Image (cartoon, rainbow, N blue to C red; front, side):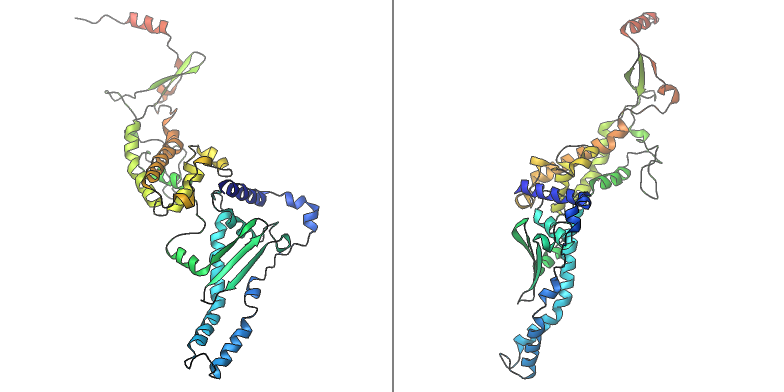
Length: 367
């Protein structure tokens, strides 16, 4: 099922992004019918039923003298149209998640198909064999059913169940948190960047953003403890060194709090793991991976892995921290030039021979 989910979800995503159908003469000339008449068909026979119930109540020909059953049915019929509108709106909002940039393609592909039907996407019309029907149940609930060539099993969603799930903060399609946006925000909150690194109005990084001085390693005399690296052509240069342990201790409480917040909605944690965290990729790689199978065989399964066991929560925390350190902090601690201009100038690489000569030229220590 997992491979089928990925395959069909990606097919729909790629189909929606492609312009190829605009150049398909047969498709352009086709008579695609997207009018499923959802409400018309659902309420086709309700007029007669309403009239009959109303007559029974007025003529006192009900099942019992109080006309309790008939009045209940009348009440449900009168409330049904607004309930249908609200229900269709909720279903549409839930299914729309499948259009998100970071939608996790490991989820049940039927929701993506249903969204394509409901929103009238190319190749998912009534003419293509797809259908969506709304049913009014005798208990007052409603049910929407999607069917068609890609749906070997029709997808049915009940209004009462959907309302219950939404009231508990659960979605039928998991939203993937924008981890990149969240981590950019965190970068300005963790307290390791120097003053003026963050735009106070927008929260965005300033061009000269850098690690605060307190995290830069120095010698006992206050001078910078540089790392010397060779850059070729007999030249070397100084690079700043950072107290990485101190930085990690500073950011960890912020990351712990962030993950604790994410874990309040575990289905989003699964999505974040599958799309961003689980594959141990870089941000640039994630831009591509989000369009493919992302975490692949490392992906977590919504049915099997929810609720999350503690070992997976711990693993997510560990990988989340590594992802943040690698993709967002490392850029400020790798290959950073000295702030002292004179120290930033490349210099002749000291060979062993030069070092020996310099050592020999040093005066003997006085007793």
